[in-house]
Amino acid sequence: MDQSTGDFQEFEVREPALQTIPFVFNSPHSGNHFPVDFLASSHLDSLSIRRSADHYVDELFADAPELGAPLLVAHFPRAYLDVNREPYELDPRMFDGPLPPYVNIGSMRVAGGLGTIPRIVAENMEIYRKRLSVDEGLSRIEAIYKPYHACLRKLIARTHARFGIGILIDCHSMPGNVRLSGSDVRPDFIIGDRYGTSASAELSRAALQFFDDMGFSAVRNKPYAGGFITEHYGRPVRGLHALQIEINRGLYVDEVTLEKKAEFPLVAAALSTFMRQMAELVGDFADDAGALAAE
Picture 1 (cartoon, rainbow, N blue to C red):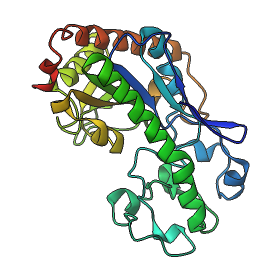
Picture 2: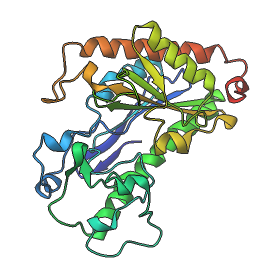
Picture 3: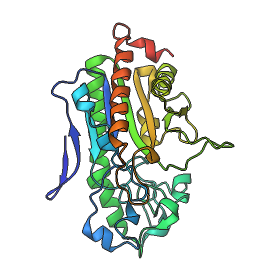
């Protein structure tokens, strides 16, 4: 399922010729198509407004279809709409009229300016020149957010039905200056499993080990344990697992110019190896689909 608005495809599924592994890969924040009217409504220039995007993450995981798994890719930018939030986490200060009563206006993410329709991008830079209409905000959710999640649910359900297990890898990047609390350690990768609630501990431990074996530093859950997508779709007792991966942008992109570094192909190759290793690990459980769920 792909979703188009006019001549523009808001997101797409890059399908394998045949799905052969019980994985779904998702890149919800790497979109870089900025509508002209959106840019016109912003304080920010075309470079600054990209600061909170997961730059090139869809390209880093581009081998997923070749390895036998679908890859869902957003083309709309995170600054325009964030599908890694509840459907209605909205800041009433951003809108020119009252929001419907079902809207969650009190979440920590809304307070921080990072709701379903963000108020800021990285470094607390305000996006909009003036308030949005309520209809504009709700229309983005109806036209893009809901179809995106319908597509993701379909991919996960199809995978689970085919293999008896489904594993969602939610693919993200993080600023290069992220440190572990109380230390100077800047991890290369963070594996988020909502503190063991969204995926089997076996999967999380294996993911950490695979990165460690390749010479990277990888940690679990801190400071990123996973967002709405990881929390919402991970149901280990049902054989549905969701892991979030955060990649240190400093490994592969110049965070000032947002251009790829020379190391980009090496990081992409490492992630291809990681995906293959995860698939092989899960293949070991093929005869006992409940083994991971029982963790």
